[in-house]
Length: 537
Image 1 (cartoon, helix red, strand yellow):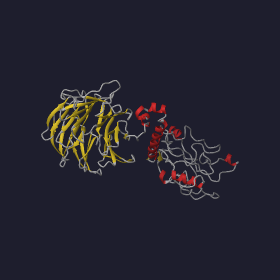
Image 2: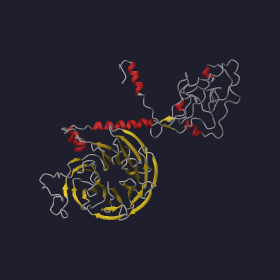
Image 3: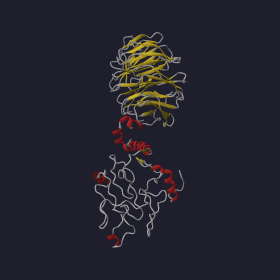
Image 4: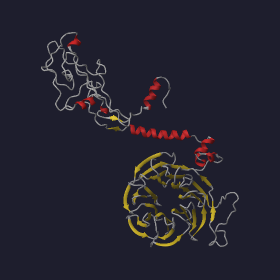
């Protein structure tokens, strides 16, 4: 990916992973081979949230501009609505799929009728941006988190706020109901903590610690109701088991509110990570989503990477020393990771991009290589300045005519060059015609590389060299030949290099920014003909 990944979402059947980026693009990744499948421009601004209906028949997505779009499973866009005038941060379907709710930076939650795309209710109560929202998997209950540090529970029938939970001390970034039982509610915030609430007691029962920076997202495991994963602003990923405290050495265990004599007054039990992936990403993790079967976790990050995670094979402990757990420097020192391997992968990706760019023809500006108002002099080329970027010299230089070297056509020789003999043809009366009155000599010098061509030899006519021989391309048509004169040289055959109009069709007035790479198939066939390979791959 070339853009930060804001959203990752498994398709309902688990065969593909859908990602949404800040460029507004949807990308589909194969969930088995983990390779790229397709990409499409879904939104005109950054994708902020996506949600599948419980029936798996619809997908809705929200963007930075406040627009919500309806998609069929084949990604056919059937409807777009302007849900908010501010960025939509999150959305969720009702259990019946007849309604959905959105949360936006205007501090409002809105409930829409899905079939008509009509706004039904506006939920007001947050004092600042609403950053997240979720609909209970089986009940008529909404939860939202805001920049005002508050978590609110709502009745979707009348839009009334049922209660406010004051557990966090900074912006609440994610709130999610536990999907299997629906009893627990998890939240995370920019105060480096995550909390788990029991909606039956309307209080927090677990306090999840371990992150050193803000927690940006979380995800419940789809099968195990005591297992959830968090992603941090520093790229760290932590896995928590709610029935294991995993206390550091020397710490005394504490009771959970469920086991306390007075559960209403007991403090929340502190839970530490059961597993840490400290270097999962280079920058903030924006989205996490478990595969429907629970064996693969997908993550999307501000480092533009989408990664897939799974448990190691039984007995395999080598993962503890990989770059994701101990960092690149330490892994390189232990020999479990090579920087060149990572660099090679990046180089291959850049090479593919360069190859694609090199196949695009770039229209180069026309170079004026002749005098204004006069036909060009064949075989004489003014030097061309190279482009500032160094990628082109302004086109191919004209090739010299056969047998005449690289200095162009020779001018007619004077009597001294013919050994005292007279020319085979007579010069016109009055000599060579003078230059036009409007001719700029300084411009003429620049076009000929800073100096004018040499003057005619002694005995010749003073002034500008005579025009090219009659009948030569760019000159006047030939008259009847003089007595004893063999006539003008014949025209070159079509396709002869160095003549206008005879360039290959793909280079007419065009210059490639970069030549296309050679065909690997042709190179392989050539090696086979030389006997270096016995068969093709």
